[in-house]
Amino acid sequence: MDWKLELVVVPVADVDRAKAFYIEQAGFNLDVDHRAGDFRVVQLTPPGSACSIALMKNSEAAGSVHGLHLVVADIDAARAELVERGTDAGEIFHFAASGQMPGPDPQRSNYNSFLSFSDPDGNDWLVQEVRRA
Image (cartoon, rainbow, N blue to C red; front, side, top):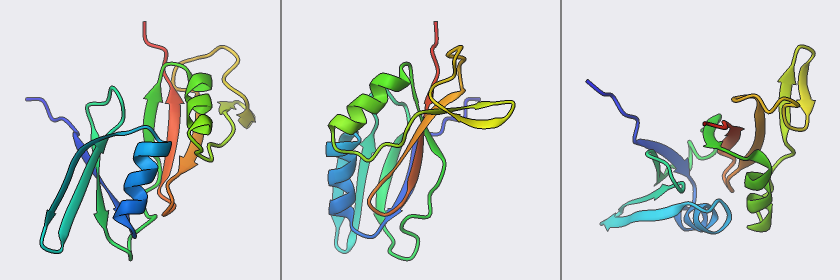
C-alpha cells in the first residue's frame, strides 16, 4: 500500500497576504480558494510537486511551521528565481565536517546544498538541491 503525503497545512494570520506571497513570490500554483461561511481554505502547489499546502487562518499558530523542504535540480537557478520574484531568499549553504559552510556543496552532492526563505508569517522553508539522473 502506498502512503502519499499530499497536503501540509500552513497556519497563517492573513490568508490573502499569504496567498499573494506564495503565488507571486514563491511561484506556487493556485489549486483551490474555497469559502464556506467563515471557513476558508486556499490550496497551492509548488511547480512539479505531488504535495500541496493548504493555507488556514490560525493567528495563534501562524509562523509555527519550520523546515518544510522544496527540492530543486539547480539551487543557483532556484535562488535567482526567488530573488527575481522579490523573495528574501537566504544565501546558499552546505554542510562539511566543520559544520555549515557558505556556498553550494563543492562536489554538488545530492542533498547537501540549501537555501532558506520565510513567508510573511515566519513559516520557514528550506530549498534543497537534488540532481537526479
